[in-house]
Picture (cartoon, each protein chain N blue to C red):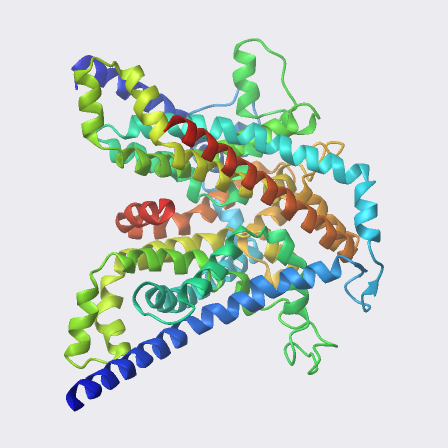
Length: 285
Length: 303
């Protein structure tokens, strides 16, 4: 590339970068400005005084830790169950033959098109009147079922069809001979999966981990309807609660928001080297 | 001969074993999907013909919910708002993400940094993103109004003005979504063979012509993918409206998703909400099919 063109490209890239990161910059700046500076005009882009008082305030709010832990529990639960069952199913769809396989796969895939609002109310009723849970009788009456429980919070996320899809796309790329050689050597099917394909699946599993973590961490609508107790709220709900409780108290709000981004940022940075490739190949094909 | 049948027998028993394993591996996900994704559709369809408050047993009331829907100004307003939101978000989102992908597709130092930075909003939780933008839009101390004041323009009440609220939410949504589509476009760009560009260069085609004659048409399947996925997700919008505007002012940001939520969980009118969710499902399906066939025709004509 010619140097002139390269400089022009760099300038455009930087302009877009500034626009994309301005909201993050503003969030961070706000979270470390003292209130006197925060509510002054014109706003300062480089804070004159730096304070951590907003973060301290957030941590001193008893509920924050609870919300954060709840979100973490739900997200981790979702990751573990997804990794386990989606890798099994994805592997079977990619590499094991049986009658009706394609039909079963199409049935699964077609559910990805359904808007969440369609299944929302029945799923809520199902979770609320689950037989023998949360004080319910065998007909699912009388109690609260899995409302206000970690299982209830995690249940819409635990086995994603998209996860099966990612794993299938990934396992399709290996030659048939790989499984056949193992079979000839007398390895049984479970062994072939656990000893050969599970270790090979690391990139796809990392992608799946990122997806299921962010999805569960991100969710707002479902926690909003299945939790009524404050102690079971997730962080995203908590943010909304903080907002309505302390309207326009932007310092602590932005501190809280920054903290809500940290876990996904960590997961993403740790696992991202695998992420792009798998996400892309499974996204298009 | 005997040996042969034994071999066949072994082979078929092996096939059986494989099929058995496959069924065991798939069963949990399949059963889960049937219970939590497929059965609810039918359940919801049945509920949509009833009056149901979530506590007492549902009462069958025929087509009443759908009739009420047809004549509800509130519902049609929400449909229009939802479509408007998609129209505000999608074309700009696609254009910007394609430009970003073309820029990112250059091999220069530090490109990985830019790619990660452009992707950052995608992994930001939607509630967090909505919060940040509410603060940016703040009528008194918001940074956008500061920028306006630099050009001596009067402050705008972005989120509490009926003419700007929906567009303001849409801008946040575009910011959060372009990184994802950029990645999809990038994969599409990298799938285009370099030979095509070299051949075009030999024929004397400039950068612009290369883009319009090679890149753009060959990206057609990607456009389609991005468009349909975008349609499905924007038509379901709920969270950003709930957090940023609460559906207001004057219902100007009340999407169908918002209305379903308030009907079902504020007014406990779950049967009616189910009928609305079916209407939404049909709208999404029809629009996806339309965009699918439209693109197909265009491709055929070109080829």
